Length: 268
Image (tube, rainbow, N blue to C red; front, side):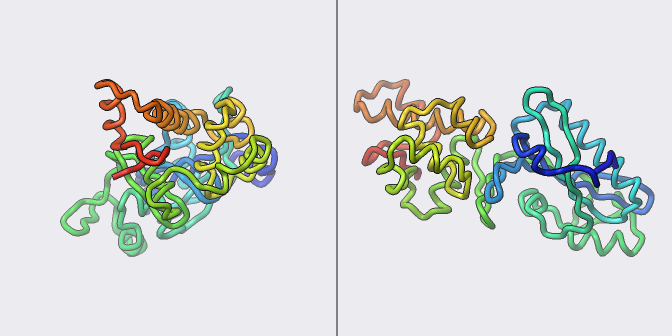
């Protein structure tokens, strides 16, 4: 268990947080239900996009070792802190028997019914629910972003960010909040430090006010993959604002299913 009792969360506040969920039966057979990238307390991304396959396999193996050492019949959720530069990782928290987690909801895994069968002594590879064997490791064909209790799916990261942000705030599908657009640059930087449920909006406004991607990442501790995706959206927004449309620009806009309207990105 690598000394988890000595881990101090504050020591890893600058590291990205990844949660892994593993299911185990009485014979020690294990499957990975899925994983999520914890962007902040309110926002998560599925699947994990910003770590290498090597690190993913290592933390997956670590979690299987943990659940086997604990001899748990059921599931376990483990949160790891990962250093983006060195790819060093630390196990910082684990929870037993966490039902109806975001990971299960996103992957549509029937955890509650599976747990009942496991507790009755059945093995994972023998359990069939709704005509489907449950011994499988879920693979998402779309990107999902959860904001609070709501989950939004799309076929690329930019669209997922737009959809989750705009629909969660019910802002008529506009990727902009007036209260941020009226702020000065220094005030936006203070808002970035909050890194709350509206962080994608504050990042978008920070980019509009020419705060660099690197500085935004430094302030928010959000991976460059996500900040860079918002940068792409705002760059397209700026290009469309020139009202000088070329075939390539229209094609690029269509790839994220957007049109230009009232100086904002609009999703249909």
